[in-house]
Image 1 (cartoon, rainbow, N blue to C red):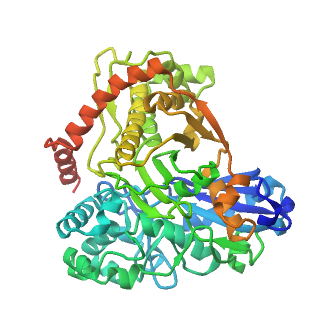
Image 2: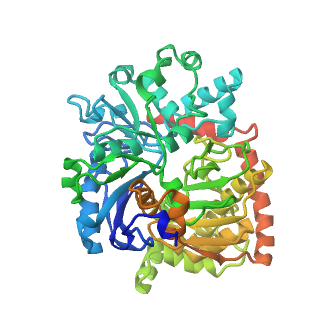
Image 3: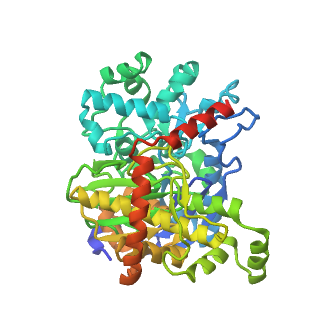
Length: 560
């Protein structure tokens, strides 16, 4: 617990609310400021979900699109926050602040007053008027041009992003909007991260957060890519930063403003309480897991996995999503890497590869499909299934930064069973994480501990596989709502309850250390499987074989 002189005067009866905006739903949690106790939570599933085939009016979408409806985000405030408050049994007047986190990079095209273009009359049938979710990968061609031009011009900022810009990020998505719907691009007045848009709705003030600006908006040392560079991409893109992106930056844990009367009515919280500057789901989770020392890598595992770590060493890590001074914790270099598909891959297999007979057996045992397959897979020895897979079903974020790559399973025979494939997919995601860790180590940025957060921590087999594959002790965050807890912690700092997030983490952060330890024999067996994974990884991802890209092109042509 932090010393009393470092915190607010009456922490025993004060609370904060954290709201975590995920891919499919928003979750709110009420947290006690004194010790981080989570007293009540609630979830609200987005009514529109992810739009990846058609808009609400039936307009068809092309391949690799992933959109959302911004009103779903406001509905989280209307439903999940009051429900969490009720579940906690906390009086509204005891709440001193609210903080939010968001998937990134998720972008909203808006008018000057924050109105999303999809809510403007006459624009509901225009795909580019909607929120572009983080996993919108249809801007890969623009991302490739951004990277290639930066390489040709030897732009210094490129290496801060591992030498490659992702199709998920701000500039690629904006350039796609310009080139595919120029009328809508020119009508757009602000290009806003959803993390900042929701804060805007809460406090009435637009503040651009330092985290997404640095990691997703190519802002380094206070400077964006130059007007000359942008003009070389597309002459109409020259003034993108000045006209649509640039805005005052709010620091993490800072106060963006005060809760408006309208937002107070939505949430049931007191008007005027602190609204924290926005943040990214993965980054807020690090202090929630107590990861405030160099070398503690936090893997937030859900539909995708984001790897974040702070270090006192600055390195240029191939394929990283960025390194930002103070990007996670003040005074340290903040790194981000990630895998575009993890839980999504397991979910895909259940949807497409779970036989009716297995479903009947699982139901008889009172198990869901994941539990049933995990139980079957847990009985296998390492390598028994004879398979190795690549975890690229949603492309590769790190270290290849190529979302036109796709999944592979090698070794299937007529004897291959669903549990064999399921385990191979679990292992593939662990191999992907090991690839990321090795890239950090080879770049002079040591990783000493792996801390897991997110819903997948409940799968003990998966956690043990990660420990064995990476040969690292695995700690597990002691919270089922890591991002929401982290958002609440930042709100506590914004409300003045703690002087900084490190002090806050000492009181409110929590993790169970070394829960899973690597087994030497299994680790040695996984080394052999990982060597095969590496061969496939480099053959399809780094070599001259472009079969995955050709197949992607054929698919796009067939769907046109």
